[in-house]
Length: 314
Image 1 (cartoon, rainbow, N blue to C red):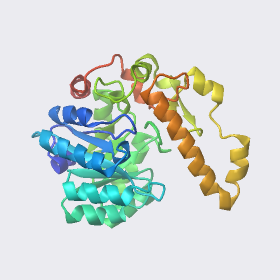
Image 2: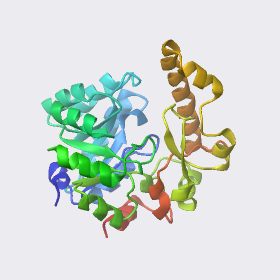
Image 3: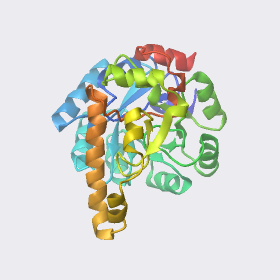
Image 4: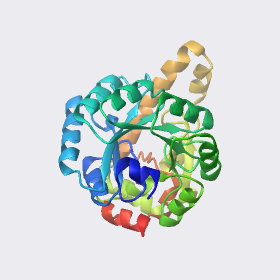
């Protein structure tokens, strides 16, 4: 038993991490049945009605020993944020994970209706801000995470946060098997957030090709690219990624130096990158930009979510 299992009333100290385009209710229902917590990005739903329907489905399927939550992008780039927060607070869930911005408003509104709030952080400075705002736990995003990752090693980040913060630390990144979970807990984490191993789950909302890539490629095939969101992001080093390169174009580099234009360049790059990622994840295309982290090293087959959980806990 850890502080995370107590906070969420779950059997094992694991959160199935929210993954853009990948996570869905089927995965989270299986996660809950397996005794862990599951989380879905609110942005995986185009409309607020779809988000509301997903919450109702998860509430109806909730089982003892499992819990569910949603991930919110809390900065200005997410124009749906306020509506998403409102719907989540109206319908209810066990927890919210905030990313990319100040969690202050989320914490205030969620706590008013009894929802816990965990916040992504990459360093001590932001972790202490989160604690000061009343966050329930810190998601420590390290340099082995998939997608947008931190800069510190799991050990260094966890130990620093545990030494200086009084709320639970949940480690995100670098977990593909039980040995990795034990390691993160030995550094002082109260639980782990695991994403990439669940991409190759039967229930995931992505193409068979994307799932198979997570089986065929390994940790050495994960590289950083600036071509998706303008912020470095980890992807599988497919022939297509090699062809287009991983750096911003020269024109983006020039425009990014202009303070007035920088914001717009980033928004355009984000939009283009997200569309490319969506196409690669959901339909057959040679333009394979597949987001994943190094923990796919231990993904050897496309399996039901239940079996992936069994591998992680046994």
